[in-house]
Length: 217
Image 1: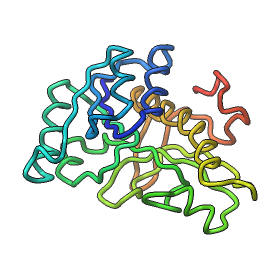
Image 2 (image 1 turned 90 degrees about the vertical axis):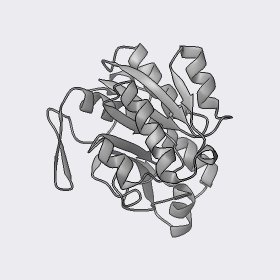
Image 3 (image 1 turned 180 degrees about the vertical axis):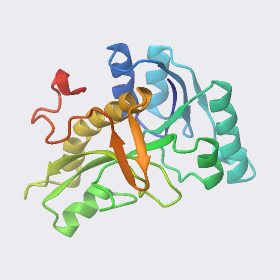
């Protein structure tokens, strides 16, 4: 499966995908990376690993529709089959999503539907939650509310700050995003309403050490 990745920042989740492909854990390739930020460190990762990339700036287009149509054109040109939002800081319209029906996924740093939108880690701490985590989900028109593919739980300790909690969650993001892409690329994911079924998946507790190499099922 050819995937396209949309990024806006440092691209650590992009790097997790690159590593998974290079280790042979996911079959296929990253066909294109699109950034809406010319200064994103994700671009340097693309250069290092010789991954095709494009910078598409919103300010260069008269409307959001034109901006999104250009991204769709570039992705289609590369025959992208799955679009992965890995820290892409823009809300996509129904027109974009309809170009890739149920083929756009996102990684969000909370157990959605809890703590949607920006600063999810801060929201969790301020709410007094004891457990948060991260979610890979299909993207819908409603922000951070599409069908859930996989989640990982992270405890919130009394001493946690927004920064420390973010770092803990990020380690699990780097595990579950490649896992979701692997499942989809193998044709194992089925969606029934809001329920996502993964054929042959082992459900339950993730390894205590998120860096364990046998995490991939």
